[in-house]
Length: 394
Ligand SMILES: Cc1ncc(COP(=O)(O)O)c(C=O)c1O
Image (cartoon, rainbow, N blue to C red; front, side, top):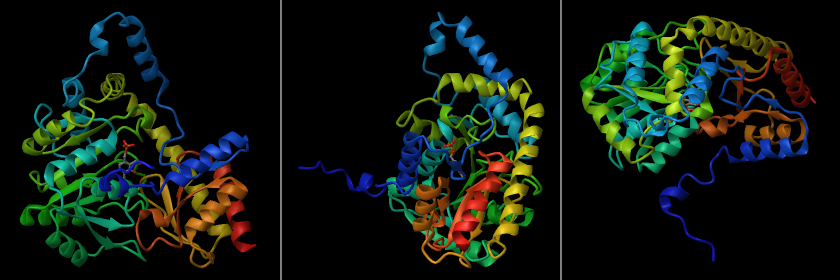
């Protein structure tokens, strides 16, 4: 007899991204090449100098037991200071490094522990649809009720929609820049969300996973207008680009940070020490100053190539060129006869083009696809669109 798993676990099974992982394994095993427009991770390695620094530390300190020890669940103090300085240099009010910054095992753990710290099971939490799929799995696992506000078809959220959602919930999660839409908060919205958070005593989980990957938009911080109820959740998965090394952070009021630190003791306890050493050097050693402008230029030109190919080869596809982040979210309703999930599976199996269907981001995405421009170089992005176009038109 098959083992019975909990309702909690069953609520997130099977993961909606599972078929994509299966497809990647199948394509890898078959030895066929494929186009990775599905990944939410950079195709550019971190600066070699910082990786060499870490190798040197590992080599020279291999006999030093402190290299293998637990760190504080809050993270090493120097890194918390570097994160606080970094956020301040990017325009956010500076969090208190000793009491208001927690280093986490990636952004997902930052989201999980901060939502667990500010809500109870059953509490309603607002998300804007389309919404990053892990928001749903975290909220289901924690037993929260998801309150959705749809931004389809224009992918905009009006002031009235924000006011309504804040009136119904205990917390709201906003990705800024957003995944999958690339939408960013304007200054007016940042002020509005902060006001709604403080006035209604509703926590705003401000997910800034792509916080350095801006091309045109300005970076806005609701934290600057409401410090008690806005919780910043960040990650180093995208910059310097170490998603598999799991490092992120939460920056918040002392009370929330204290709770996050305790919740972390029951999740991963502390973030991997080698990753903390690497990111500390990345921030303190000023590697980003040279590295990031090159990365931004590269992503900008890939974005242009992908957007240009879509405009030329699929002129009836609708999308907004994102001013930040690494995705183009495209409406193919003028071309698609089937659901985008079925179509994404077909083009993956038959042509090796991997994309993420809009259905993974909540209701309303049935004709949409998320295309990442972070992994593949320009020419390959253009080839992938050519394949998609010939399939859609044929
Ligand atoms: C909007 C958003 N938030 C959080 C995360 C999680 O980041 P991490 O890989 O560090 O767990 C991602 C990753 O893709 C993301 O897109």
